[in-house]
Image (cartoon, rainbow, N blue to C red; front, side, top):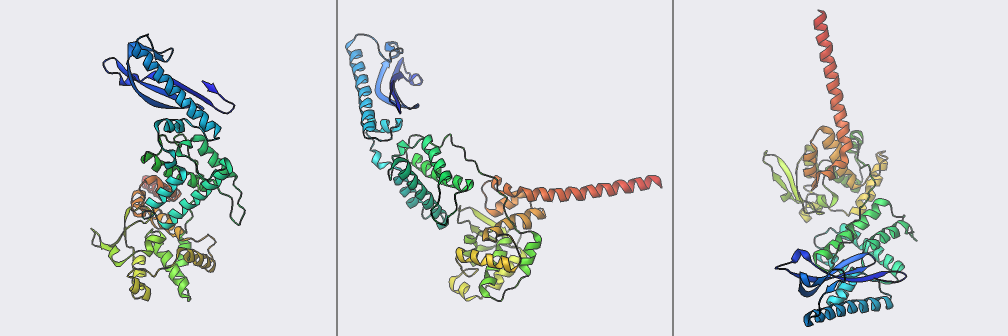
Length: 420
């Protein structure tokens, strides 16, 4: 093993015993850089009896044995030369980078910027703009990290290891914004790590990377209580009428989401053809979530039906062929804050709060099973829906309280009968 002040390097030859056939085994080189190992096929085979495991070479004095040992020595020297070149050029040396160099793989085709560009281009039509915009933000932080940590604008994918992952996380935790932005919170940091991981997973699928640097990384999210409107707050909002059309329209869209569970983008893209007749003969909404393309079917509650009928003759609806007049998400959330103030609701009203209200106050709190709620929300995993478990517990507590009263009442009646 060769050791420098900052790294270790070694090459060891061995037989791959799992592939022994008729006593013949393939010879592999095990390359070790800073404790990270990769295996390289030498494209040579040998009789197991002719291998010296202690010396990591063929044994004997026959011409073919000596020729094989010279060949293995050339491989070792080549790897050492590549190691020295990368060290002298102050490149970030890794076992995978040396392996790619030896195999003649052009690393310039496999860089971090290249996979980010490929990801954002190939998925731009599949991801909602808001989601794609978040990937651009993660890219911005990765560029800042590369510049500060490595004094470079790009890096080979083979150079990204577990330490790179943990260093990037540490960088995000210590990042101090220079403008009006707030420092990143833990969950925001985990979202950046999650997006980074997805991009590297794509690189692995494309075979641009030989290993998964995230394999040992465990995300740690802080538990967050999902905000929602209580039954009283929802009633207060429903009763409030606004003379200003923009405020009334936004309030109606919000209420519609409270009774359907649809996200803003899914409400805005609704068309008359999204209203279908279900197996029960009643009207349902059937649409695909913009975020995940998951098909969602929701029975239309009376209050949701009334709102659809209200906008049937709206000029924008007639012109756009939609169920509701369009409005940007940014404006909508800005107006919701104004509506919240006017209604005396202290919670931070955002459109997503309506989706949470549907999951909690409208459905779970009224005894709708969590499995049904999960389907209507378009969740692919029920664990995603279980973030609303507190409401289930509240409902369970109420139901058990009623049961307790009933049991007590029955017991009291039975005792009264005995006395008589």
